[in-house]
Amino acid sequence: MKACVVHCLHCITFFFAGGLKVNKHLSINKIGHALHELSDPFKQFTFSPKVKGIAKSLGFVDPVICQSMYIFKQPGIGGEVIPHQDSTFLYTSPQRLMGMWIALEDATLENGCLWFIPGSHKCGIHGNRRMIRNPKKGEGESGTTFTGEQEKYDPETFVAGPVKKGTMVLIHGEVVHKSEKNLSQNSRHIYTFHLFDQHETEYSKENWLQPTEEMPFPHLCT
Ligand SMILES: O=C(O)CCC(=O)C(=O)O
Ligand SMILES: [Fe+2]
Image (cartoon, rainbow, N blue to C red; front, side, top):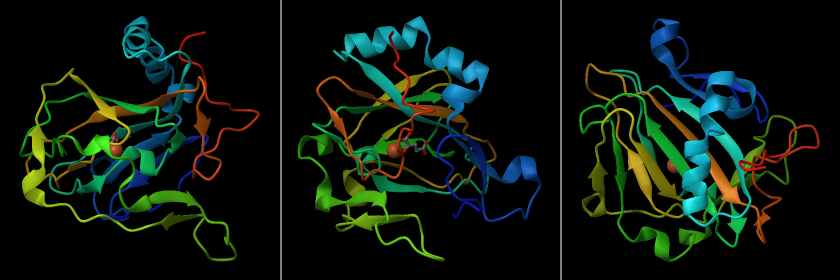
């Protein structure tokens, strides 16, 4: 499933699934990547005392939010998210990335809940796979590129994580996860954002998403 617009780093972009073949409300795939900054309801939730408390309980010293997304996974057309490690996209050294994924509707086996490979977060980035800014970007070339190899994972090793509406799932930056195509009649709306502990941590300058002077990554706890 391809998005029909390009990534915009510091704005709110609407990504549509497979162009606009069906009603716009049903073909929208996701909205990203600065909801936590530019949309009040998402900002309020992301910077809520509850979220701060969770980051604190994880031992984060100076957590900053680097991106946020609303994923619709619409009935019938909500595409699969292939197996990946989030640190592939938002690499920090040492690894300090965490995803906070919130089910806004029940996420079930039928509508495309998350699946994980237990223990897969214990040995770093597999195959040196990283999505980085394309150093050779030129006319007509993509602004991003991949390093390394896409690891092949045995589907049998994944464990499903169906959850009820309102559940927050913490996704370790290096755990392999995926979600299947939504073949059901029900949508699967979620809000997800990523944070990392900036304390004694280097956020890779090669990452596709970079903070700017005007929009540095906001501190969760000030
Ligand atoms: O919700 C999904 O299907 C995938 C989300 C994801 O990969 C993430 O939040 O890191
Ligand atoms: Fe992910």
